[in-house]
Amino acid sequence: MQKVLTRPGAIWPLFVVPAIYAIFESVKTVSLKGSFGEFVDPDAAYYIACVNLLAGNSLHFVLHPGIGIIYFGAAVLAIAKAIRYPGALGAQALLHFDELSQIIRLSLVLAVAAATIGAGLIVARETRDRFCGIALQLGLFATVAALTYGGRIMPESLLIAVAIMLVAVTYSAVRGEFTHRRFDVAAGVLVGIGLSTKILFAPFLLLYPIAVGFRSGALATYWICALLSLTLLVLPLHSELGVFGSYIEGIVKHRGPYGSGLPGFLDFHVAAVAFMNLARDYGIQISAALISFAVAFIFRHSDHGAFRILLAVTAVLCGSIAMIAKQYTAYYLVPGLAMVPFMVALAFTLVPVSSKSGFVAQRLCAAVLILVCVAGPTKQAWGWYKGALSQNADEKRVVSGLAKMQGACFLAPSYSVGMYNYPIAFGFLYGARLDDQVAFFNVALKEAFGGMFPNYEYFEQKVFRPGAMVDFNEFVGPDGCAAVVSSYPLNRDSEVFGGRATDLCRVGGLNVLLIRRTCEELDLPKSGAQVRGQ
Image 1: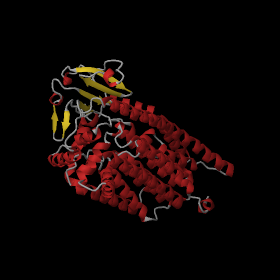
Image 2: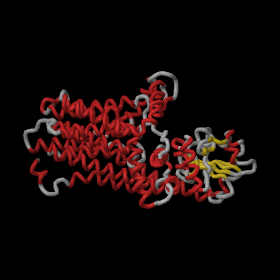
Image 3: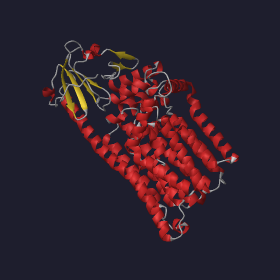
Image 4: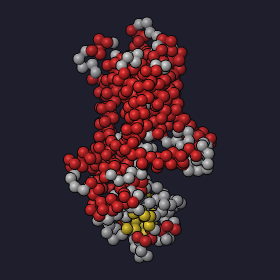
């Protein structure tokens, strides 16, 4: 194996998987545009947080806490704005929201691809095991959420790269018998970055210590670097951490999602539903992880180092699963399940072989199981992408139909659509409600658009302006006309609209509620049934 790896060009396979990932995510990002409806929540809120960081405003949106992704986005935003959009930060950030958010997403894609190439090269260089390096990179394709959420301005886009790098560093450290202190440092820094980005990364704290075992020198360096890097990342924003603390306290003390529901830590019925959803979404990946650990346990004496790594990875995965029992969302497990292809590849290396044909059979079994893990998500992601293009077309059709109302009527985009600057309005909901933020963005809005644009805040059933929620009927007089557009259900009989709704149209997954207009006038299809809801 060593001779193969030292031949010129032998490392090129380690560029293939990240390159495919980068191409898919780049095409997706460019074709769907920065304001694509599904990319509104939480991307737009993080975008506004990046602007707030650069402007020196309060952040407030540090719920996850999300600091890692905010730093990354702010750095890209600062460079892109300086190069392409000179002028006042606030106005330029709002006026060019679509382009700048695309640049941040593309930068994330390239950063993740580069980190994954680095992880593969680290494994190949330090362990002479190119197969495990490629398997580790295939974590990018291990879940459909890793592909559909890839490159988005949200923690998981960054965390998958951090997780893959951390596994590469840990594996290389174990294979090198912890003779290189740089791995202890790198592992600690990566954990600090992960924890500053999202609290759900906490189980990864266990990865390096379990693999290290009782080597006190390596552990001491790791913990010092983890604490120091976390402190350095969080310290500049320490005054904002009260928001994060209150958010986490609410989650811990209540049984419902996002700190809602009855007092108590866990609703066991909700947990049971979460695990059923887990089996539905990731049954193949979880089964592959269990098979890998079973194989590793049976042949644990053939390679104690590899077994320790698999034990550590399994513990992290179990911890990640346990953390979503309270509130299940499929993309929460993107970093944890990214380790599954690597688990499979490493587990099968523990199976003793005594011939070349046995070695080939061993690798073939692992490759087939890995292929089963990544084929399904890849196919589903492609189906999602085609559906997303269709949704983009639906939004364009709605905009075309509502053009007849433009200027004469109140056009109010709502959750979660990408038209009429709604992503900016959503970002304001979470990132522009404090006094300094309101003052900053009111000036920016006047410079960019002449003032705040119409919108309809779906969950509070009001029109949002920085610093205030206003009754819908204040904006639409008794003789006024309006259109409310949402991907969520709308009810023409709702009291919010004063009983004035005259029609309800539906284009694909988009609902259009009309006041003093009809679907026929706008050449939009009627909704097939009255939807009771908002």
